[in-house]
Image (cartoon, rainbow, N blue to C red; front, side, top):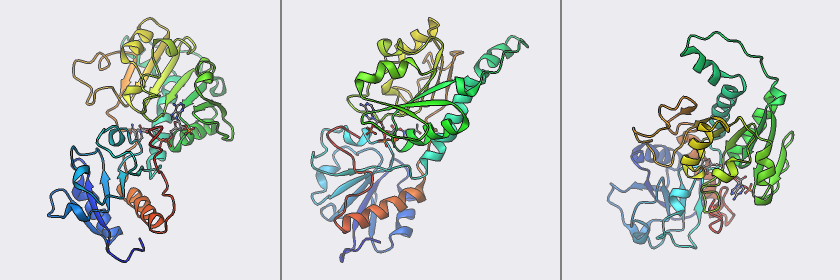
Length: 315
Ligand code: NDP
């Protein structure tokens, strides 16, 4: 529980889930005054806001706002708004029940390629019973772009299952069993040894379009891509070309540049692309509210909250 004398005033704007968030927040913080945009509230009193996307124009009406809590792990949709004051702290969710889900998603997707389920799906369409050798899992090299709360959990789980795993991040990391690379200058080498490339980067000005015709060409021939981060990290036309020319084996995508993926988009009926509708890891209300409450306590004690976004770099 936060330890301020006056009750905290907290505004929720959560794109359709306001009432669910409100009810979990009220249970967890019974002394706080929790409101949604539908309630009759005084904007001048709001201390903290919980946002999914940053609602147009709302920030300007909240003169005493001390920080924004993002109701997701990614904050690109919150920090991208030019109306967001540079000095206003933004706090994101770190794991909060999402890492387990990300691990499940990536185990399935990585095994899809490693055990040739893509090949057998194509064969089934032709009633083809051809059997292929089963590869050794240790010979399948997985590269994980982004070794944060989610990427490091995925990398460790795949390594524990027997894959040979490496990871790439901005600053150098030490994770047991994982070979690590850091920085732009190591990207080509990292990609060159990734038979399955997983993208779990946050969307920032530096990571947008990071996978394009040039960088995709560094991947070994026959490599596969799994992207459950943001669609903006991959140039979709370049990805299609790399698959259609046979350089890449296929892709497993949970995100797209435009969501929902338009009905006419070539990804939908491409035989080498699997699509899921941005479901890799859902925000868990209870775990998220626990983390928000702990962070309110930290803020009340004058401590740095967990998941504080570095506004300079955008994540
Ligand atoms: P974190 O912020 O914890 O980790 C980000 C990682 O990416 C860090 O390792 C960071 O490096 C690295 N990174 C950032 N910028 C660069 C760069 N320019 N070059 C190299 N590495 C970089 O994020 P999370 O793990 O919590 O989440 C990752 C993303 O997953 C989210 O931003 C969101 O977009 C997506 N997501 C998708 C969901 C879905 O359902 N599809 C659900 C939840 C999240 P360093 O360690 O050095 O800082």
